[in-house]
Length: 106
Length: 243
Image (cartoon, rainbow over all chains, first blue to last red; front, side, top):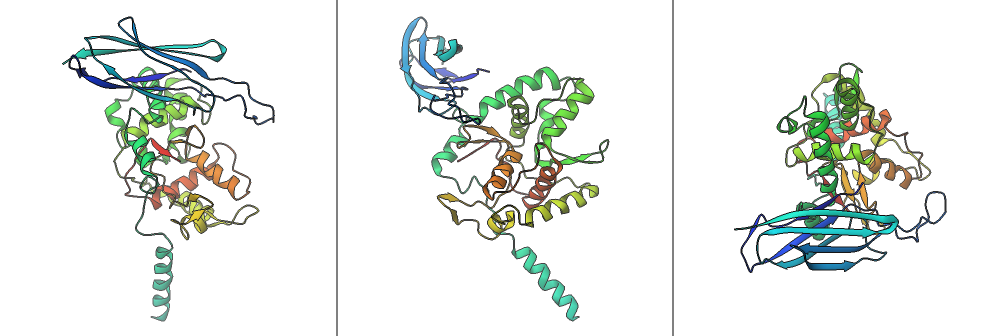
């Protein structure tokens, strides 16, 4: 169950700086917590988030344990033109997810 | 005459037992948590709402228009004529699946069921809670009130002793709310996940060291009936975020 919400403004003007908001559904299990049976639960976190706009990398982040479940990230982006913003997630146990959001010019 | 006056006095005392004015848990939260709930791009419960919307489109849209779901969550638990008892919104979703979609019921408090519940509850956001007017729900609601006032657990507390007698005060660092179910299902930061009212009630029962009711049992439905009647007229703010 991997779902992500990527919110971009409906339209933007060229040169404008807008805020991109990313919300990902993920348990972000730290690897330090004991489960109901007392045994430590294996680590299961997202380790890398990247955003590409029309092929160019515009944002990247490494995530670590101690980030809450369902992480929320926001970053500014200067709009150069219309196009697709692709946000990719990588994590433990081969987790990958990809979300695309279109940006249109006003 | 004397007897009437005495009854009046008892009635006033009973009415005074409920805190006034009524405040929802939302009003008593920190402003940062309120901001998290208010902004749909930040509210983590919207992940479940989105999932519920997709499930609604595949399973429920054959019979129901999304627009007709406005206000539905605000009147549950509601009477089910076939079962002859009131059912919660989650139980109604599963009954609908079994009777009309001919699908297996979703497991209780699963993410799938919480998603559908959250999607429906969001349609009622801002609408007042209107308890089911069906008169046959009354004995169940009365049973719910009895449970609300019954002392339970090793600590021997009833719901009323905290939520009627001491709201606004603190239990360790946490504020005691008045206990109005306006925002369910909620994304609780402590759970780092979604939960419905039954999970909340179970946490309270653990808190007073009582044995919680079984998952999906009637006791929860009866308590929810009473809590919804107690909060009648208050605005829904589902899906809520709570600390």
